[in-house]
Length: 124
Image 1 (spheres, rainbow, N blue to C red):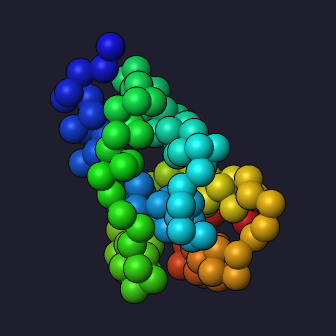
Image 2: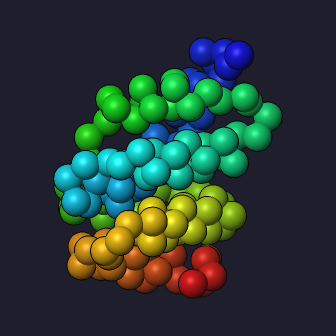
C-alpha cells in the first residue's frame, strides 16, 4: 500500500509533467482508459521505489484539467528536469499520440514543440 507521503512527493516533483501529458491525452476532449494507463505507467516508472496504486493516480488525474496551449508552452519552456525525465515525457507523449487511431494536428504541433524546446536533451 502506498503512503500519502509517497504521493505527495511524486506530485510535488511531477505535477507539471502530469499537465503536459494531459495536454496530449485530452487533445480530443476526453481521456481514454488506455491513455490513463499510459500516464499511470509513467508515474510508476518515475517512482520505482514507491508502490503507486493506479486508483490513486487516476483520482489525482481526475482532479486536473487540460492546460491551454499557452500554459502547455510555459510548462515545457520553464520547467527543468534531467534529460532522462524529459526523454521519458517525450516518449510517453508519443505513446499517447500513437495509441489513438488518428493523430490530431494539435498533437503533432505539441510533439514538434517538445522537440524544439528540448533539442539536444532528448533523442527524437
